[in-house]
Figure 1: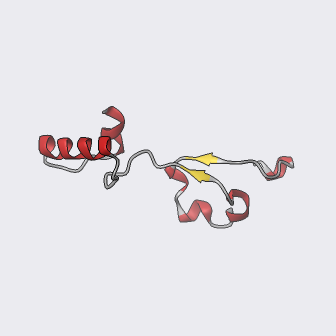
Figure 2: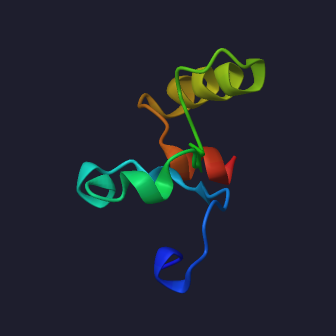
Length: 72
């Protein structure tokens, strides 16, 4: 990893896959300050997201997931 290579203080950017307690256990000092993005949040107040979620629910009678949002 970065620490083994002597790299200190980089700004890390990760996906929501990083939000895993097993992955983060013991790595907290290495990922402190990291930015973790979430690709899709169905409860968002952002207009385009609300419109997509409402349209998806009406069309498919189910909740959209991240794959549906990426397809959109």
